[in-house]
Image (cartoon, rainbow, N blue to C red; front, side, top):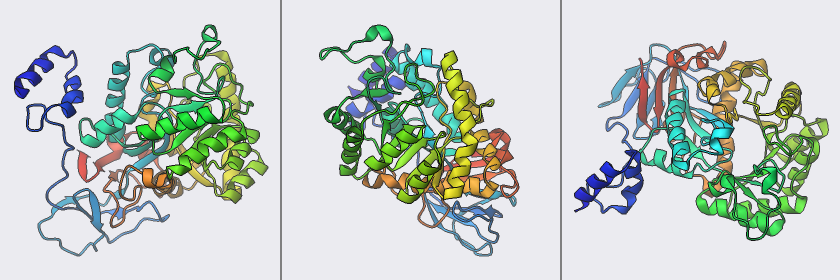
Amino acid sequence: MNRRLAADLSRRMVLGGAAAMLAPFVAPGGASAQPRPAAASDRPVLLTNLRLFDGQSRNLRNGVNILVRGNRIEALPGAAETIDGMQAIDCGGRVAMPGLIDAHFHTLLCGLSMPVLLSAEVAFIHLVAAREAEAMLLRGFTTVRDAGGPAFGLKRAIDMGVVAGPRIYPSGAMVSQTSGHGDFRLRHELPRGSTTPPGYPEAVGVSALADGEAEVLRRVREQLMLGASQVKLMGGGGVSSAYDPLDTVQFTEAELRAGVAAAADWGTYVMLHAYVPRAIQRAIRAGVRCIEHGQLADEETARMMAGEGVWWSLQPFLGDEDSNERQTPEAVVKGREVAEGTLRAYELAQRFGVKVAWGTDILFSPHLLPHQGRQLAKMTRFHDPLEALRIATGGNGELLRMSGPRNPYDGPLGVIAPGALADILVVEGDPAANLDFLRDPATGLRLVMKDGRIHKNLL
């Protein structure tokens, strides 16, 4: 009966993937039993003849191999050691390094333009996101911290092996005040009454509007219930939003404290969108642990971040070919102002020793996705190449660990060390000289391994 029912459903569904969504409700052993993740190799894998960048030090090591057993890095044996029963992969003298981590990404909001996202069927949005997730993995990004959007289903599908893609640390809906950076309503939709149903962006989990401490508590707790590993609050004006100027400060300190407390009760933290000093400083006083963007910060703000140990999640917004699509003339002007502040932001972060994370924030701009790695390659404008690479691997991995017990993955990420999860790249180039191999991942990446499974091998 199960087999006949599954076959009938498969014929009826327009998209074959819909059957997989029903799998948890079918009895085990039937034709549509719950899908399981593809297993790593049964034999231990030994990567040999390589130079090692481990994601922690700022140099390349010679004379070591990498032993992978299951989904873990078991050891870094000497190049002369032999391992019985292993599957050897000769890296040809190339550099092996950890998988890349994008600390500010939107897995559901990157593959379509804003007009399409605000009008398309939810199923279509998720199917596009699944396609882009696999492409991102093949670009060498084995983990992303999702900075807002309904990524829970995609994360589950990737973790179960239904589709290929990076590990996802989801934030869930972006929690915003009325008129804030996450308020996507049009003018004719105001005012909102107590019985007014949520608009489309709220209904599908892109954003969640909250005014007052009680509402902030409710919305943050909802995201935690859904499985957020950290929570995203909108604390200031944005570039892509229509109604909030960059200089606006959003959420009162009491509202921010409510969100921070709700996250802390679950053992995790708040990441906060803001650009200007007043918004950043208010957030730090409220206990926020990670500032997203902040390109318009001043010296006092940078000093405050360093003193409080707050992370600064920066993106190379330079007003160049990798800029997100701007839908209005006002957004173009705001984007230019942010780009002008980017150089100073990186200088301030280095001068005051602020802990810096790296991400791309590709948003509503599918044409930028193939160039995700290029946005890391250009970081050599601000850092030594190996330091830029360390930030995007071991550094970002350290940031991810702040989610504490809400961390969805059991093991270190962004490093090649015994016990770490086996996310490994073998690259065609010299990271000590430049990161140009990231500009064309089709040729620059010779091997991509995630969780001990090889997704690409050109060696």
